[in-house]
Image (cartoon, rainbow, N blue to C red; front, side):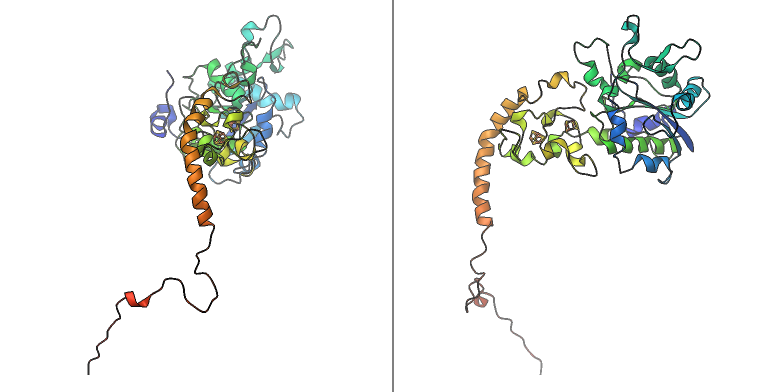
Length: 367
Ligand code: SF4
Ligand code: SF4
């Protein structure tokens, strides 16, 4: 059964106590079924930026060695693979293992393979992502799944797919615990919101340094402070919903629930946080929420752009109240937009000020 992992519970686990690591590797494999969009997205983070973490600009973090193919200073090939091979042999630690992309089921790959990362030097055969996960995950100080593909399977794990794709926790087990005593840390999003990932990674690094408790996770292993609220609860258009003022097409600033927005039932902070440097955020800027952070994405939210089934009921229920309140607010708004009538430059005072109703002060002087 899935459990929530609070700060207190996590810190009390034997392996969950803060370590005192001063140097750590990040082994980041994006050879899951994916578009590498999460790696690209993370380059947009500014609070903190990946550059600041790697360059040691942030006080209190361990020294970080990042091994990510897009951000690697190596020329690729064996030079890039070397730390991964060393870690698989147990010769490189400690490291955080970041998995990007969904995990295909290589037990049903027929005579081929679904996805690979380097070759076996002896046989020349491709080494599958599953081969790497089997060797690196148990040795990793922490395991982080980035993006909805790695966390819950995502688009590649849709009904009817031939690969049997799944999320990392489906592959390793939802009760998996890393060598550092942490559960898998899931940071979903398609792609991941840049700061959501970097903030989580920074928390894990502070925990590795011994200066922070483990990150609190919900039952789907998401950071609680990032995914505890719905899109609707942070949406700029929420007041339109409350007043039953719904958009009929995509050229409207009003609530988009009737044109396909799933925001009321989706855990995501993007409308609050924005996308890049606080700007953007799906419904805030005209995009319906298609629930890309959710474990049931995409199957449970399709066809996109159709009104969600529950929305017809909720929007019908809110309509009488919303229409009445909107009318009342409209009347008050007209009044509130008028200046008081005593603001004029005539030669009389019409404010209502009347000194007679206030008793005069009498003063007695002692002689
Ligand atoms: S656009 Fe979506 S998230 Fe925003 S208020 Fe409407 S239903 Fe809620
Ligand atoms: S608001 Fe919806 S579509 Fe946008 S990132 Fe969040 S879950 Fe995905």
